[in-house]
Length: 88
Figure 1 (tube, rainbow, N blue to C red):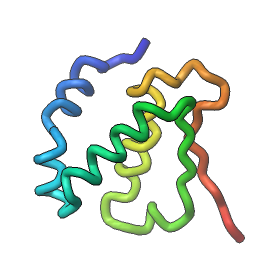
Figure 2: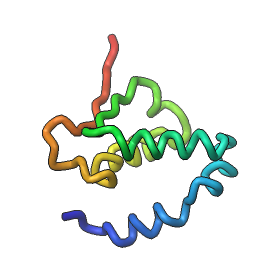
Figure 3: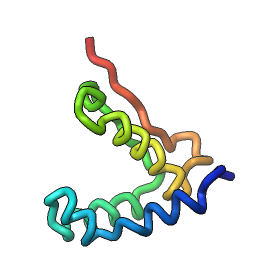
Figure 4: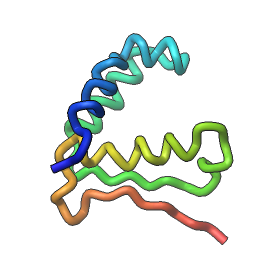
């Protein structure tokens, strides 16, 4: 139900944990742990706090995060969401 899913999936597959570890400096085990957590937790719900958009790449990171419920198959669940918390 997503336009461009094939191209998006190819992009995801192009970044296995070892490559992501090289780019981010995170240990592969930590990347695997996050993947396991996302795969096992239902429904997927993520809260984004203020300030992320103020960093280089923050907007793209936000867009990538909003794709997680779609990739995990949680998008049809009412409680699967990505929320932005605004603090004033």
